[in-house]
Image (cartoon, rainbow, N blue to C red):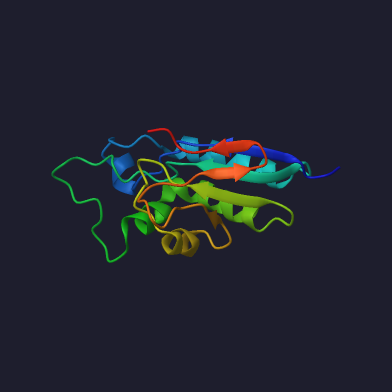
Length: 152
């Protein structure tokens, strides 16, 4: 079987551990487990050629106005990536990225528009960032007749 399928996902909204503990985030542990299992299934599917994340993998917006989103020396995206509820997703993405013949691409969304290519590839080495260096938060995935960007 040849790898010929492209899977598009968006609006995952991974948040910090505080977002779960304080109940202002949208992504809970149960969602992480389910999405992690889905990503593992993709890695084991010989027909998958690419996973395209079309924005809002991370959510840096959902935080009460009087709470600092980051309390450590890490940037907010690293704090989110290290949150325990997000580990099944981060591990699933790393598994996919490491699977021969599968490309994982990322286009920014409105909730993670400030992430830069270097920050993303530090968290997920091998991912293909599609980030316009001239326009903050913009990127357009293009392949043959398919074009995808995050609608805000």
